[in-house]
Amino acid sequence: MIEPDLFGGIAPWLMRFSFILKVILVADAAFLGIVFLQSSLDKLINFSSNRAYFSETFAKTFLKSAPGLLLIGMTCIELSAGITLNVSIINVLITGEVQLFFYAFVLAALAFLMLIFGLRISKQYAAAASLTGYFLLVLFGMMALALLR
Image (tube, rainbow, N blue to C red; front, side):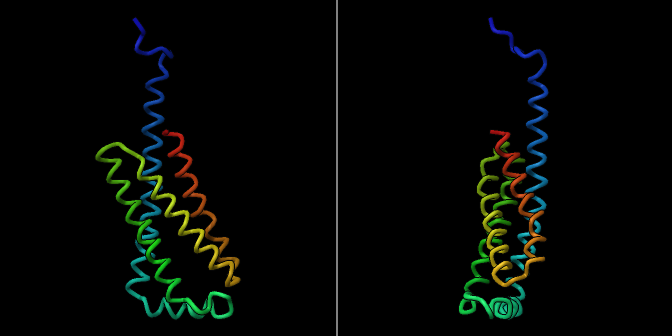
């Protein structure tokens, strides 16, 4: 007969580690979910002023002909990321499953890459650099998710 705890007490530690990783995922997703939902809802509510900002920002770049399309695309990705992050939290709390976090973090990474690209193209280097912490938070969530697999 095989002993249920072959590793002399490591199984409870792994269970605690798994729980801690899930807490990290939920906190990470909650923070990013708030960021993306607020940002996308602001873009929807103040669409005309955001479109004017995008027009001004990209006026001297090769993206100058598509500020409305850029704004719509960015809003859709941010809204999708925000919703998916929050649904991921509900899903892990109800079922314990973490798979949805992967898709949420991919959308979040895509949103930040789009933001950084736009800021760099428009030569707003300091603003682009300020997004580094947010992007690292997404990568941190992906690493926590990978450790759970």
